[in-house]
Image 1 (cartoon, rainbow, N blue to C red):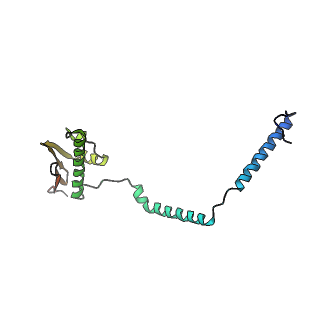
Image 2 (image 1 turned 45 degrees about the vertical axis):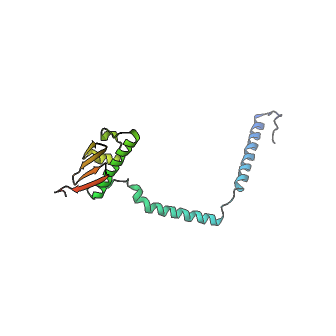
Image 3 (image 1 turned 180 degrees about the vertical axis):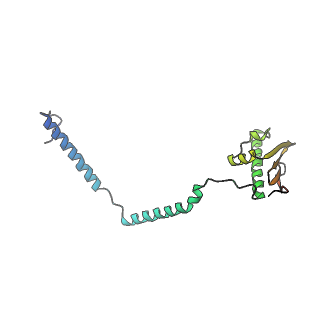
Amino acid sequence: MSMSEHQKPDSLDALVEAATNTVRQQQDMAAAMAAKRPVQPRGQQVLSLILLAVLAVALVHQYPRIAQPYALPDPKADLTVVAAELEVIGELIESYRLSRGSYPASLNDVQLPAGLAEVVAHSSLAYQIKDQAFTLDWKLPHWNAVLDGGTGKVEVTPVSGAQ
């Protein structure tokens, strides 16, 4: 028995029966909608599984790279690393000059990348402004490196007696 909007329930039993009928109707509608959902064709299911397997294999293969954070190359290992890092610092100084019109008063005014800043903090890097250029003289335990900002040339020489 369903109630129309104009009828008033005569008793609590009639109200419970009306609520029960409404819930059954909603359940029937939900079941009908669930039955109408399209089923993914077998070919698409297979393709989805293959793509999932390829993704899993790629992730397993790349996991060693993903798991370890990037580490800057060790300046003790190769003089080209020292030269490249010195060139990066020189380019940051030139960028500072181009954006502000003059060279920085000190290297503290130049924002270095975090890893490079840590390397520089634990070494002796001298910065000097000469005429319309600058020089960087970097003394490391295994290398001495000099960058001439005017020519852009880097000279790296090993420290005698370094291991």
